[in-house]
Amino acid sequence: MIEFNHGLVIGKFYPPHAGHHFLIRTAARHCRQVTVVVMPSSGENIAMELRLQWLRAAFRDFPQILFNGIVDDIPVDYHNAAIWEAHVGLMHQAIVAADQQRGSTLPIDAVFSSENYGVELARYFDAAPVCLDQARSVYPVSGTRVRQNPATCWNFLAPEVQEWLSVRIIIVGAESTGKTTLTQNLAEHFRQHLPGFQNTDWVAEYGREYSWVKLAMAKAKLQPNGWQPELGDLKWQSAEFMDIAREQQDRENRQARLSGPLLVADTDAFATGIWHERYTGQRSSDVESVMSGNHPRRLYLLTDVHSVPFEQDGIRDGEHIREWMQERFKARLQDEGYRWRPVQGNAASCLAQAVLAVQEYLGETWNFTPPLG
Image (cartoon, rainbow, N blue to C red; front, side, top):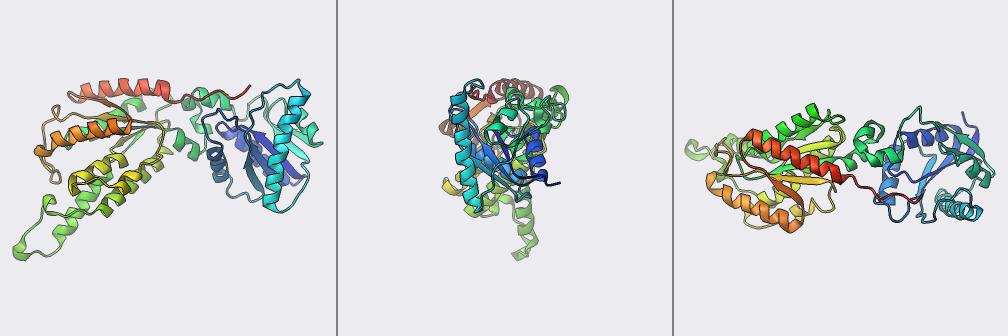
């Protein structure tokens, strides 16, 4: 039921959660148009544009809502009229910019909020205060709670936010060093033993799938004298590694929206760049660019060539290349400045080392700078 012309929702959305969505959704149902103003301080470590991107994605089917942002480094003091006016002045700037984007102007006549300051804020706009779920009983979540421990609030976050907040554990290493076993064991361990991580899943290595298909297609072709090629007979092109890297990254990102706070992956686009170097003899800036600006929470675990006997499965190069691959992974991980840890020994030992490394990483990865208060 439309009861207002122009609703206003303001907040830091640091990060956006289900309580914020409730406010915005309610405003959209009761107003002809809605302006949502994202107001971060400059010291916060989720970019304003990223928050706007998340909100626009969540409300892409609500054309009456317009999102805008403005940096607000003014301190908070609910008892100081001058500070109130300074904050409201920034809101007006953002609203005017939104109106210019719309090409129309309607005065704000409703302010939607779940905070105690909502009534006073509405007074500055001569608007109706619509106060929703101040006790957080409908949606028991807040930005503070999310920042303190995203895992405990995971179900209150939109898929786009979950994807960004997820912690990626990437298992890399030479052939036949137990990568897949460790990937599966590590995901299973956290599913079973860490509260809030019961949905932890893993991503398979797409390059192996691609290699099997490539070999099958080559064997399907008629060859002179009935000759059947092996993987070592095949020629590889840079474009193939681009396809592999992009697909590996896409699968990882899609699974991050389903896996809960933690995702374990058997290789990634970074590792694909090293395999490009192995098969073509040179690095590829295009393949390596797939990792450019990639997910910020990523821990690499490097398996060991001396811990697992080599086993040929039909698509592996051979034991002779494993030492080179091991050292190349070490060098590239160090050169790129990635966080990484070696693991070695039998499957149980590797799992124990990996669990400790992941637990340490989880303890420090979700560090958010506090908002101005």
